[in-house]
Length: 617
Image (cartoon, rainbow, N blue to C red; front, side, top):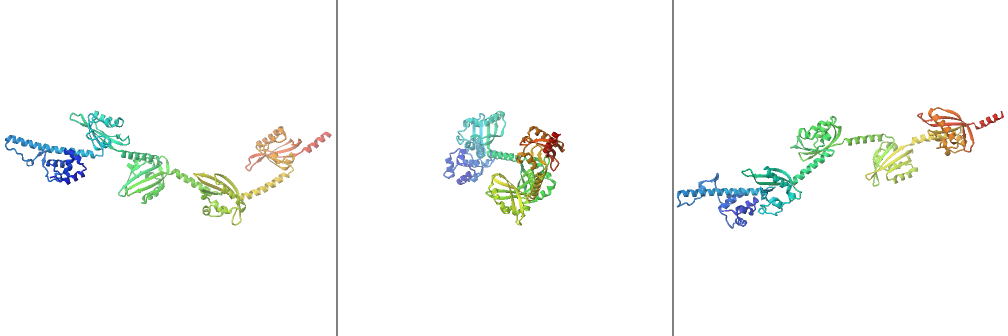
């Protein structure tokens, strides 16, 4: 007797539909449904076949006992009694033998049908597209995933006898068809060939395997094909390769490693980007496979103790900078940062920061030079009308007699020290908010009453939309005092030269007048503006006289010696003057000749008297 509820539960647990079970029993689905609802009872033979199909003991779904079978032969006690009364002994024996054979065949058939059912269930539940074709490449079997692929446009029965080109387009199936024909010809299996899965518009990737089924004559009878959808795996692998490619091109070493049960000694790399060769000069394979501490061998000896101490730290993330000895690039600076994920997962980023370090060192050198400068230098960042000093050198402390920190934290404090007479000049600074250069001169009035004279240069640049201002303030108080003394001396010398009885003038190396004393200008009857900046060719004595003058100038410049001669010069009013001229080289503090200096004595009257005496004689 069948247990209806037990059958229904076991069938559903094994995910077998009543339709599938009915098909393998060669029954209508309604019949199986009636059994499970207890309306009808199946015969004992059907109950045993159901148990075989479900791969369970018959006692799980009925009150029947298992039949003992040995080597496909039933024990005599298991053979039901057969009524052979009235038959000849020989005929009765043959009939019993025939009955036993029929029972064995029935049991074998049941087992085969059960196995076939189980294999079909297995094929239906595999995560692959499965199909079988005959030697003419006509479909003889497909699983449910195949039908789903073609969107159930065919059933298992209707697809039998069709070809691939009846279902798929030639373009999308040509790759598979070519491999099927190859297997037919070579009788060799094709395994895991990457293809585009048909009906996916080349959006899904699959692995195709085709197995030839040979008959006793070693001829191909059927082809069994399977397609595994590896799209997600393929995309993930592609992303992984893209990531590896990208990480290998950037200027970092990216690595991933792991330990076992938190044991640091068990650490091993699971990934290291290729740039380990560029930064450490260590081959990737060596670092991963041979010695995961190989990179320590390139650490600079002066940084090794610091690095070991850092490695022992158990706080994450952690970061350090140290030097390495790259076999090809020499000493390099690197930054190493390690992160921890869970107990045993680690990853890190190693960056070559040599150029950054060099820039830091250059910046430090520049700051040291600026700090050593005697000029007061400040650099400010101005954004939204708010000024913030980002650098103030030590000379500001000397200039304002204030701590650098106070000057830096009070950007407008310095204005309080500007002399009242020069307060208006500050408006120029406040108005000039664009890029450019501004130069100012003003006085500071310190709290003790001391006055300092300042020359300030202001430079402004806009970087990334932000205005930066740099100021250089020079205390020119001492220089101003010296200049005032020089000016006094200059005035005194000028006064002395002007009252000398001789005519004085001086020129540069190009023969351009750069000065003349009062006596010389009065003799020429010309003003300073008419002489200074001119050459002898611009003056009224003509080109012939100018040639003679310039010739003597060049002689003095070339020989570096003083010369004397008599010279006749035509004045502006046409009068000719007779002069005794002395010319000498004009030298700077280093003794270099920078022009000529000359003096003359007017002997015109003496010459006139001399001529009168000659006329009398």
